[in-house]
Every structure is written in structure tokens, then in C-alpha cells.
Image (cartoon, rainbow, N blue to C red):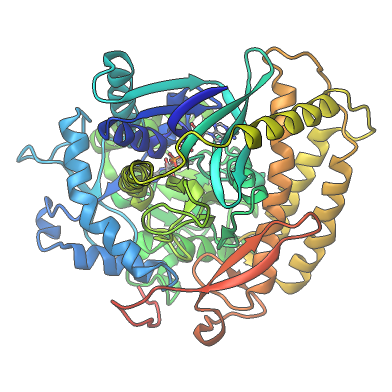
Length: 575
Ligand SMILES: Cc1cc2nc3c(=O)[nH]c(=O)nc-3n(C[C@H](O)[C@H](O)[C@H](O)COP(=O)(O)OP(=O)(O)OC[C@H]3O[C@@H](n4cnc5c(N)ncnc54)[C@H](O)[C@@H]3O)c2cc1C
């Protein structure tokens, strides 16, 4: 049995930042990741990261109060305001830390970190490194992690590449470690730890039309859910307005921040026709823009009834080449068009998971020693709708905080290193589950189940939702869960068996999808990204509260908890 003081699951921005923090506390940290860390979805982030630096002349008066208020308003007042304040007050320090660690941010003419406008602020607040911000941030943190892995000064930092966590071990309300599958050998192993931090990213691939990496299956949320930790606010799924038509590859909000237009088949900038986006136009929050776009398409003002245009031509070649080189590259490679000469065909697509593992602003959950950070967690700082650029910020702020609180918890813990029996029992149970799956010879093809789940989520649990559509989705997802019990794997070897990995994860995806559906059906109001055609108004009397979903073998059990207010009273959201 392996032992580390703190095990961090996930090698993306949140996970690496947490592990570095544990290391700074002179403890032994291990990062376990199912992919090599720089293949985590963080690498794909394009547009930027928010902080009230006030470096741009138009944003010179920016402050933590303004940024925090914009975040709360953007969240449609569902975010926990104390958590938002914590995040924004820490934002500038975390950005400068990344700068000092070598992150090559784009610069303004004065040589300061450049900022561009994103949704929700109305002026430039988003720091960026061209349109490859996630790439630059993740490489910067990975360099730091590798430095401490090799230097062995301070504590220890070990990275386990290509290990899939299948189970969280909790004994009498205390976290004891995890069970993980080594992909190279196909062997399961128990990892004992005094604290565990989950930074496993989002679950975009519950949907077929997603900007997310294929690895964002939701398994990292299912594992703590199965161990008794509730998932919070999972019905809030963000649809990004501009994804490439057909493939749903992201076309960053930065393209609109730099001045790009959205136009319909009449050549109109149609956002002017919608009261919610009339003023902010292309940089109104994502939920608002995505709904207006879908309405345009449904009412026949799209192209081929499927997409609209993102027009960058008026920005000119130089700006496109320096500020949006990745966008130009993707358009050339995937569509054979150059945005300097042609408008880009775009449609809304699933993009971000506002909900996640229930935890507080210290990253702590209700299980002692278990923490969560990044997109997998629901602190909650995004509430019902996340502002573009706030998610990268969340990863480095709350990654650090979770690492710090996990370290402090260990310093005060009495029974360090306990849990051998619970871990050995869990390992034996996981072994027999694995044997069963490898020997399964049922009639169901799991790839068909996955496709049916993804299409069901797209069609019935998308941008516009109704009672009929959601009620229909409930028996369908249960049927898929039943059929999953009778799957057959194509490949039954142990070493690098990706068929095995994907299909273990499918079990997690199906359970998490059921939570999204249950939460959406129960929430009879429209708030942020959750829009019900049958309940079109926000209902603060009944639903100014967080949804908590607990696992039971039959179905998720829903409870609700209060939203932390205290700074700003909920108001109508207008842009
Ligand atoms: C295309 C795209 C562009 C984006 N652009 C922006 C942007 O410009 N600005 C912004 O603020 N946000 C952006 N976002 C959102 C932001 O990038 C993510 O929310 C953030 O990077 C998530 O980081 P993370 O560390 O929480 O998770 P991730 O980077 O997703 O990492 C998750 C890690 O968990 C590991 N893992 C998961 N499950 C398991 C398991 N069971 N066992 C072992 N390991 C596991 C994975 O291997 C991975 O290392 C974008 C997202 C996408 C998809």
C-alpha cells in the first residue's frame, strides 16, 4: 500500500496548484492523474483569466468590489457571496505569482499584463496570453511541480501519470485514501493518505455537443458522490455561445472581446433585438447570448437552420494574427477557412459545469480530510452562470486554498496513517468489480449507451428545458443505467486497456447525468444557465437555494441548502 500525506487527484491547474501548496507546507504530496498532467483540459483554455488589476485605461478604476459584484450578478445571485469575495480578493496576488513563476502573459504598451473585455464586466479585466492562456498557465505550474518533484527540498511531490481513481475510501466520516487503477498494468492499488483533494475537472462529455476534452466524463464527480458526498447545483450547465459548427471546438469569447460580431442570415447584429443583451451586445454573459442565438436559429434566421456567423473580418489581419492566432489556426485546419477573409460558422455548445462536489470556501467537504477544487468542485463562486475568465481564476485560487487547508488539517489530526483495514476491504471489492467487468459478456455495446446518453442530454437537458423533456429523460437515463449492467467489453487484456477505462467511466457518467436531470426537473424556475420554458422567471422565494444530490442505489436524493448572501441583495439581472 502506498502512502502520501495528501493525495491530489487531477493534474490540471487546480490539482497542480494544490500539490505545490502542500509541498510548500513541507508535507508529502502525490498527484494522481489519468492523463499526463499537461493533457488535462486546462491546456485548452483560450481566452483568459480575470483579475481586477486595472491595467487597461478603460478599467483603471477596477476593484475587488466591482469584480465580485459582477460575478454575483452574473451568477444570477446563486453564488455564495463570501466565497466570491475570497476568490476576488486573492485574484491579483495569484496572477502575479503566476507571472513571477514565468507565465508569458500578453503585454500592453506599458509592459504590464494586458487585459481584454469579457462578458459581465463591460471593460477589459481579463488577463491573457494570446488565445492560449490555459496552455501557458498549465505549463508554468507543471514546471514548478516538476521542479519540486526533482529537488525534494521542502516536502515531497510525486506525480503518478495515467492512474484512474475508481473509489474514495471513507471510514466513519473520515477520508482514508483512494483506490486507483494503473493503466500501464491494469492493476489496482490502494493509496493511503491523511487528506485527499479532488481536482478532477468538469463533466462536459455528458453531452454530445461539447467543447470539453473527451476525458471530461464526470467520473471524478461520481467517485465522491458514491462515497456519500453530495453533488451541488448540477443542473447548471453552461452553453458557450460560439463553438465551431459541427465539431463544437471552442471559439473563445476573446474573439468577441476583441470586437468580433455575431450576425444572422440577414447580416444583422441580432443581439440588439433582445432586451437582455441590447446594451452589452456580444459581451453580454454567456447564458444570455447562447439563448438569443438559439432563438435566432429556431426562428429561421440562422444558416442551414443550424448556425450563425462570428465575423472577425473588420478586425484586420494584424489583430487576428497577434491576438487570436489559435482561432485562426483552428478555422484553417478544421474548416479550411481564414477568419481574415470569411465569417466563422458558430453554434452554442456545452462548455462548463457550474455544479460539482459540494464543498465550502476552504475547499472542505462534509467528510473529514476530503477536499475539492477547480471545475470539479462547487464552492460555489459561479452560481447559476459563470463569467468567462473566472474559471481559470477559480482553479489557482481554490487549488491553493484546498492545499493549504488539507495541510492544516493534517497538522492537527490525531490518527495519522490510520485506515489500513478500510483500504484493504475497498481494494478487494474494487478487484472483484474489475474482474466482473473484464469478464462481462452481456448483449449491450457500451459505445451505443454512451451515445444515447449524450444525445439525450443534448436534446432534453439543453439550453431550453421543459417539464415534458426532463420527465422523459428520467426513465431513459434509468434504462441506460440498467442496460449498463449488461455490457460487453471489446478488449479484456489488462495493460493499457482503454476500453476498460472508458467503460468504468461510463458508469460514473450515467449516474452524474441522472443528477443533472433530477436537479433540472425539480428546479421550477429560470435562473442563469437553467432556462425552463414552463417557468420563465427566477423565483427567489422558492429557489434561491443550492440543490444537493445524495447518492442512493435507486436514484439521487435531493435536498437544498441556503445561499450565502450578505454583500448584495438579489436584483433583476439586466445588461
Ligand atoms: C475549450 C475550453 C476553453 C476554456 N477557456 C477558458 C478561459 O479562457 N478562461 C477560463 O476562465 N476558463 C476557461 N475554460 C474553463 C477552464 O479551462 C476549466 O474550468 C479549468 O481549466 C479546469 O481546471 P481543473 O484543474 O479544475 O480541471 P482539468 O484541467 O480538467 O483537470 C482535471 C484533471 O483530473 C484528472 N482526472 C479526472 N478524473 C480522474 C480520475 N477518475 N482519476 C484520475 N485522474 C482524474 C485528469 O487527468 C486531469 O488531470 C475553458 C474550458 C474549455 C473546455
